[in-house]
Amino acid sequence: MADAGTGRLPAKRPATLAAGPYGHPLHPALVTIPIGCWVASFVFDVVSRFSSMPVLFAEGSHWLVGIGLVGAVVAATVGFLDFLVIPGRTRAYRAAILHMSLNLLAIGLYVVNFFIRSNPLGPVGWGQLILSAVGLSLLGGSGYLGGELAYRYGVRVAAESTQASGFAPEASGGPGEGSGSGKPGGSGGLPPKRD
Image (cartoon, rainbow, N blue to C red; front, top):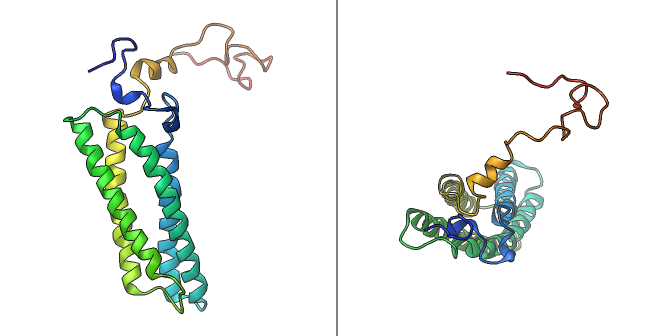
């Protein structure tokens, strides 16, 4: 299953640079856009029910749902590139299929939610609020699976040998070894740590 030339599992390498370079996948960074927008839209939905300016919050929520949809399409496209490198008939592949399915279902709910929100005349309706809550619940389940893909199965995460290099002691004269500050230890006058 490992690539003989690099010793890396296939799902650690990007399918293309558009998915981000080795060890720096773009999908986890991009998903923050729809998640942030949709959480904020839900808050605006709730506030619209209690505010003296419900249309302002309903309109803001409508825009947040729309911006989240644009971000979701970009995040899903890049996520699909990561999906392409996962070998079939594996636990990681099954988790990725479920992760993708939940996300597509959430996107579908938010598309419907976006169109039924046009031209708000008052606070966000209970149906729209429930659609948002269901969408966020789907995202929560999908996020759990995304975490499993990254942290349990190591999809698009640098190999452990690469990670270990960040914890190897540096050679004498490197950062923290008397360089830069002119003080013992080189780190703000603190002496080097001893065991």
